[in-house]
Length: 119
Image (cartoon, rainbow, N blue to C red; front, side):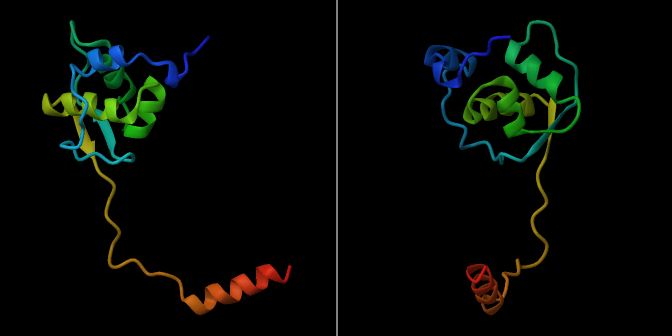
């Protein structure tokens, strides 16, 4: 199978796929946000939407969808947003870290650095 490079992707095709939309900033999706299909693809759906629904039968991250579809993440976010708006996908966001993140003690880090330098 000969896959085309992402750099060779036609901007016209991406424009068509997104319906002319280029900004996904109104969609709050992380690269690791998980989506899962709620419905099967319907007849007449855009092929990229169909493929997203097929790939998301199990939870899948936005970045994984982009890799599978060989499309830029920004384009995939727009397409996922379409499916979220119609209720065909549901979103699972990563859990925020509990409590305040603890950074390691600087003194311990200095000792580790000294130990590594002495090797």
